[in-house]
Length: 292
Ligand code: PAJ
View (cartoon, rainbow, N blue to C red):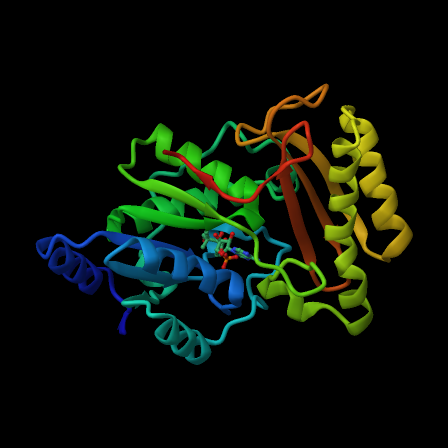
């Protein structure tokens, strides 16, 4: 596996792949790999000739009071896991390599962002889109892989690809969970033992909401209240939001009809956790997504 730290070296590598007519699958990450990341890489491996993954903790997408400095990092472990998963090249640029000077242009998203994490993390998705635009230009992937764990991010990437005409296929991959249902996340290491036990209630609460729908409930307010109550009853976490929107355009719904995302964000002492499920008005789950 190649470890590439500069844009120049990456471009030369991409050129060699393109000369060999190889299809490139790309997985963008901030590192500290867990099975969620590795599943994206495995999917990319199955569907492409070459897999490139990036590890870059993007300063632009963290707010002033967020965890940029303490975000977990472990380069050696990431290199080993990527190698074992069959990644062909791991891109690990420095912040100076990606942002050599103050940008003269900023991207700003206007749709799909005034809700969920976009609302509670102002500027976050602008930072995500800026780094992804750069990475897509550097790597020129044929297919890109994103997790449904971050359903809003995947919806925002879908908008980026549509709006800016990136010739890229988007693949949204099912959320990988612990045995008890907790969505795998790099931030789970911040949970105390007690919080780790409570955290499973995020998924259980979402499932309760979905079962209500399967039983005929069509009112978003009733579903949201059930999820909120379940989380409040079973955890000491502070709810940031519980919301329900149409997916992937994230428009408000007054009565369930079609595909929706039910999503939560909960603050624990040192970690803010998110989770979601996507389903239709019959309660049938959607686990993956594509823009094709
Ligand atoms: P990061 O949080 O490292 O996540 C990288 C990718 O892994 C994202 O597409 C995310 O949705 C996916 N992922 C995380 N947990 C997952 C799980 N339990 N199951 C399946 N997929 C999971 O998301 C980012 O980094 C950044 O915002 C990035 C896109 C790299 C831009 O900086």
